[in-house]
Image (cartoon, rainbow, N blue to C red; front, top):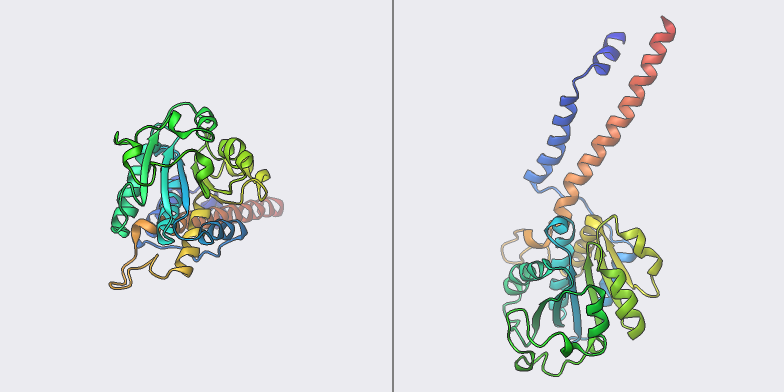
Length: 295
């Protein structure tokens, strides 16, 4: 026993680093995922989009950048897929400079790929980024044309069927925000959803979630927190729409639409290893003290 305790207490920490690397790498290579059970907040988000009648106007504000992309991209893509599946009209915009790039990525990998029947300017539009933080929201709640005269590509909004009669945010039936911080969900709740009495749901990073919980459920109807929330939402969509997770013809996994569940695999394995090491460390410490006491 003494030899085992001595061996474990003097173990090179690089072995622990190796174990952690394998705990993350193996699930990634195997595309392992965990079975997720959607929680109350996830179901609330799902129902807000699901209950809208086809043709409803949904504003999708993507307020994040590449730094938070691994955490927020899965929910951003899921939101777009779900809204298009329900036949809603999608209005994309961003308050972050690189948010426009995130919108373009979602359009290319979701709308164009899975909904080729969706026509630009008729079923969806990319309004792009406008500087001004919450100042942009304060303007567009009353007069959208004061800031937005063209779309992201420079096409006049009067030439696009779905925007030619658009006046302000009050015309929207739902606001969906994906946020990495300021400006983001909090500002959309305070300056748009609450004064205009429009329902809003969101997705955010893990560190931002505690700041938004006080707004639920009266001002913020649902929230996806971090990659866990994204994975739960993907699981909820897969349950409601079997073709979400896998192609019904080939049976192949839709990798672009299940990144949340795939990323939960490495995270879960890493967390389990950390817990095991904590328990093992305490056992070693207890055995070491007992050995010293016996000596």
